[in-house]
Structure formats: structure tokens, C-alpha cells
Image: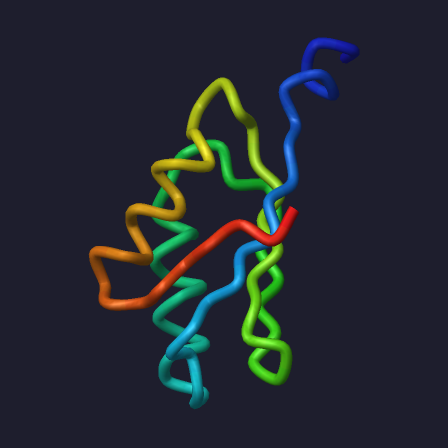
Length: 78
């Protein structure tokens, strides 16, 4: 059980360009496609996404790159 906790990571992403419910849904759907995602919280008002994930299965770089490919300016806040 300790190994699972060690592999958990949290990334707060500032998602510029996310201005409507459709964008909110797209951002969440993009992030959900990766193996190792534990939890996603997207805040439309703050323009950010909080992602809890298994860093052995997916990297923060891959998460950010996937949003950038979709046309969002995504940068880590933490």
C-alpha cells in the first residue's frame, strides 16, 4: 500500500482559453484518457484543473502536452 501512495502526484494546471462549459468538458475528457488518473477537478471560474495521478503511469509533461495539442495554453501552477 505504501508503494501506491509514493507514486501518487498532484498537478494544478492553469488552463488559459477555458471559458465555457464545453471547454470544461473537453479538458476533463482529455485528461481522463490517460491511464493512472485518479481524480480530476476542473474549475471553470479559476481556469484551472487539479489532477491526481500515478506518476509511474503518466507524467505531468504528457498531461500538459495533451492540453496544448488541443489548443489550450496549459502551464503548471504548483
